[in-house]
Length: 225
Image 1 (cartoon, rainbow, N blue to C red):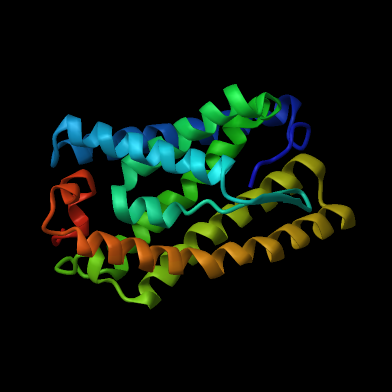
Image 2 (image 1 turned 180 degrees about the horizontal axis):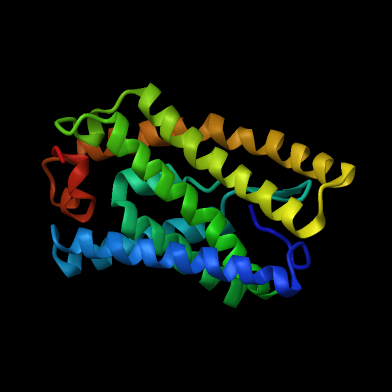
């Protein structure tokens, strides 16, 4: 999902700054909401875990260039289910920043483009979860179909934003259509894997319900909203 330098540039970057600022504002709101229900130490730890997870997704899991961007196995819905919306958002943003500063400095000019691409679909998945998951259902008890819906919204959102940046930055041309189509088709591989990762992660979390480790994860995993 990394948009390469040059795809969006010049005055067009202003829109990326605006969308990233909106994502930051919503993250701040979610942070305040989370902290009203949990303590700051637990929140900081979940944010750290999300950051480590994001770095693993960026740097350890396979990734390869396809079409207009790169396919990364970024398991956004997994981070959301295990750690909560705000820690997942902060972890993705901080992980992306660390990657840009220390591992891929050429990506830094596109930081605001890429952070929008990661966070807005996460917020969409979180909103969907509030709509489709009954308030009395803990996340560890979710069915596969629910996780597939959340993953489809997140990964579909990533592809949609990548397509938007491509057409916005490069224009609506046959070459751009081809690049976007190639990327989108390849990225659906992630959609096949993420719900299975969610199942495995939630099964592990369920097994840890009565241990001290459970306190490191999002409270919504084990109890109703």
